[in-house]
Length: 356
Image 1 (spheres, helix red, strand yellow):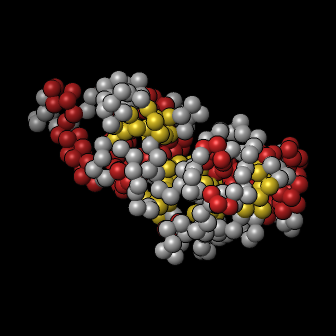
Image 2 (cartoon, helix red, strand yellow):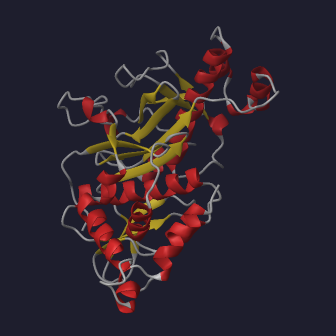
Image 3 (cartoon, rainbow, N blue to C red):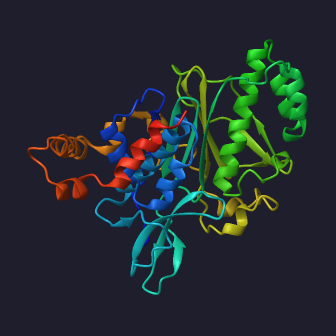
């Protein structure tokens, strides 16, 4: 099934803090999650803000898959459901918990779907998604610039993190004249590292001391365009295989995207962190940041989506109409009640309302 797609790029964000879900919105959104495993995962969160992040992240992935796959069918069921057969796509999670789209052949074998890559992140007020057809590995991270260290001074906090950054990175952080500036630079570097680790798919267990970033411009502000000039050293060697995008959703939320650039004869081993074959010029296609050569860098700018963009007016309005009829005893029967809004549907809303 896998094949070549025309270059497509998505950069989306949702303001989850501004979303105060109605009963109808929450139940419809939970229905769209697609399987009980993910719904239970969302329900287990103690705080409403975390449950909202998890649910919106799942809906962003669903909309992303619909965008790239078009009429192709993909399944949201948990992989333990064995009713899948023949040339299908299913949304699963990797061993590290990363959502991944898998292709299933007629023999039931699961292989990663390679036509596009996607990744999500959330922090503070926002949930973000990046997706791209022109890469084999993609990672995104958003971080809110804030300090919750209590009475601990910022420099004392930095001392506890000293092994996670290189000497060059610490110089970059400490060269700022204010504590806020130092914190912003710390967050910027940490977000770059997280995006790289997520793209590698190694999880937070990846040794951050192996990677060091060189930021060649000041922290971007929301009114400015994306930055593409930060570079990475892997094991003290500059790598040209990785491209990094940096932007800000607002003055307190910083976003970074890590993207492995295409090589002519891509081999998963060639981008291994320990090898880092940066001298293989014959295998490297350097098209700059604009991989499809159209000169349009606006495709990397983040577009704001709303909950209605994710669940659709038609589906929500249809549910509201049925929901209203159910509580009009003159127009409904017990069977209508069970068929339209079952006990499980009700539990989604009850569980959410009971969170802090």
